Image (cartoon, rainbow, N blue to C red; front, side, top):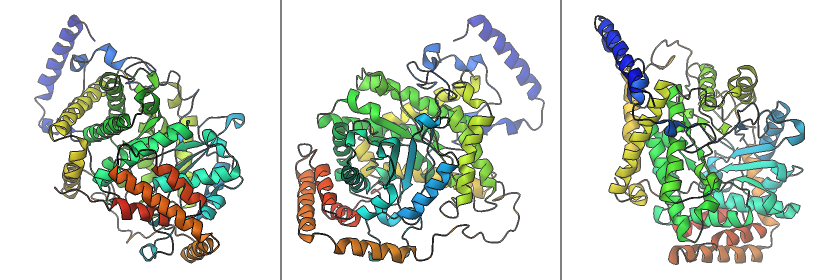
Amino acid sequence: MFEDAILAQVKLMVETWERKVAKRKDKSKLKCKTAGGIPIKPFYTPGDLAGTGQSEVGIPGQFPYTRGFREVPYSLEGWMMRQPVALGLSKDTRARMEYLEKLGWQLFIGEDEANRLHVQNIALDICSQQGYDPDAPEARGRVGRDGTSLSNMWDFEELYEGKDLTKTEVFFASPDGQLPCLAAYLVYAERRGVPWDKLRLKVSNLWYHSWYWDAAGYPPKHAYKLGPECIAFFRKHVPIAQVASVTGYSPGETGATPSQEVAFSLATAMFITEEAIKVGLDPDDFVPHFYGHDHTSLDLFETVAKFRAKRRMWAKIFRDKFGCQNPMALRLRNFPQTAGSLLQRNEPENNIVRVTLMALAQVLAGADGVWAASFDECLNIPSQRAAQIALRTGQIIFYETNVANVIDPLGGSYYVEWLTSEIERRAWELLNTIEEKGGYLNCWESGWFRSELAREARKWQESIDNKERTIVGVNDFVIDEGEMSALFRIRKGTEQEAVERVRAFRARRDHEKVELALRRLRAALEDMKASWPEACGNLMPAMIEAFRADCTIGETQGLMKEVLGYGYYGRQ
């Protein structure tokens, strides 16, 4: 990237600096690491980029998309506002959404009124995610406490009635309950007379989550089949939907270093693609509808470098390994999330600063969406005030800082370019290790992924416990404020209302239709187990028929667990 004469001159300058610093008694403090454990120097020069050519960096909008696929800055095409809303019952969630919309919450920041689209990023409560209706014994005491309770078609009607579904992007955070949720939404749209090909959906498709998340869904040998099943259906029937999330966020929350996050999520993307090809799908058609959902840490430069490295690796993998010709298949769109695990219970208002820095890192990294968490996330689901501050965080960054005017403003920094290449190098090594250990599915089933994350999580916690890493207000600069309690609680009587509602819903159904639909759903699940990949394409239609018969999420997802089995975390 630089001429030999320039590199020689820089080398002499570095040697002069080294002689001066060698006399300092505190020079040992110059040995630093990134948050992810990568050793770093006090400064970087052109000499550190000897192995990085201009073609590796490129310019925005061109291969290998290190600098992003956008050809214009955010000031012309704003990022997506990915803030989640989820609490209590459907009516509580809807009321919060309508409040935030009055404050300017919309799909794309900066969009004018005439072109405005809306977004509904809904996290289900843990009961709904695990397939328990509100009146199930397992749901007692948990309904609506950590997300929105969704179980039946009345809930969907209450959430969406009167909304223009063609101008609202919908996302359901419910990894194991994704197919039932989506089927229910499609049936609701159908009853409204809204064509499926006009629906804007962001499908999470996180069938693989049990290797990083303490809520194992289905056994790996069957769970992975849900990926191609979902992709095949939505590419055919809901063509503008995004069909699969390639997440690094939850692995990052579980302990993954940036290099692990990149490698493990790319391994996931490759495995999904290979399995989708086996059922007859074309990667040039479906890969453009994948999207990233990555972790944002407080190490701003490492976060920026990580996103840049992942974009570059994605482009190379899908061009060279899968032979994709569609340029959109080579462009990874990323909708990251600020790290919930880095928000602290002590002095929770300090989290406003933490979230702001992480949101700024997302923007500097060229993210396609900005997800700024609420400062009280470590205590409870967001209060209205905290949700407002989170929304304002992104708006202030966009409108008041001028960072939206330049694409990849840190591109060309010697440090950022070196760190981008270093994370990429380490991630390629990890991808090779995964292959050596028998491939993605074996690393999942054996527990290797999980053990790697657990080791890094222990190292992180030990660095806090021994004060190698300072967390303000937690292990240093601590003040005694007493035990922090929740700043927000859901309405009293929420659970009882949900219980009565689902029971009333069941009572009015045609029970013969329900039983017939559930028998057909069971048959489709059994067929998936016994005749894969030939059976691909049978499950989602059967799931939709179940919701046309007014089955509940608990009934349909419960049947999935009964037939496919319960997941596990790995044997290692």
